[in-house]
Image (cartoon, rainbow, N blue to C red; front, side, top):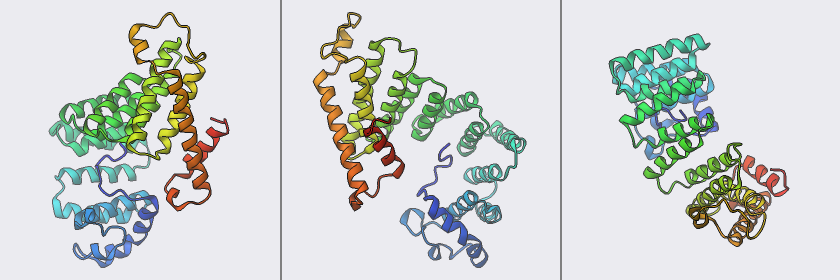
Length: 325
């Protein structure tokens, strides 16, 4: 899973690298106290606890391949909390996965997870590590089953619902993927990225050959457009939302809206009620295009207010404006 142990204050790759590079020195000089104040990047209130510091050090070291320093951090955590502590067990499993040299070694780790869960089925960190490992071993069906089981005991775990959505999407199960994100929104109703992600899944589903008629395509695109609009409403300036809104309205205008008043006798009354007015779709398309052009222009000009946009998203937005999407 993307964050199988729900580590707080996730660091960037650069911060993790800098921290890991200095870890051996600190681990050698410091005992189980006094480490926190002398290490950069971890002085925020969210990471004021010394033992969270060791945890972050361990993960940073694993990300950069420093297994020796990671093991020293793990040993200190085990010494403090004991090997039977659930969070420590999860971290130990993470360390074993990172050190595994081949799939055979990973299978042994997986078997250990299964043994632990057979004794304690409620061990959440181990459940999540097992799911993550099943994904690494390319076993999506087993990972889906394990996530469903996890959610039965923890139905408000938004991260688990989002992960399950991604797994369903990878298997082409679009309605299930959407359902999972709807569950995320029950917990996080203002998560604009989740609204946009729903729009993306609906757009992808509209490309499915199973949608053999304009009515099915229109239904998926219309709901997707509503999702993108909500994401932009919650986060004005959200490039991904504007991008999705443009590609969805483009496709809707090219398919179900070939004419201002499409002739389609197969539409039901409910379809007509859900249908967006042709002029509304046009206006949304113009609005999305204008906003994308503004963001790309300001970012390219070096406007500091637009420095936070990811370069890869800017490149994709330029390609869309140039007709290369």
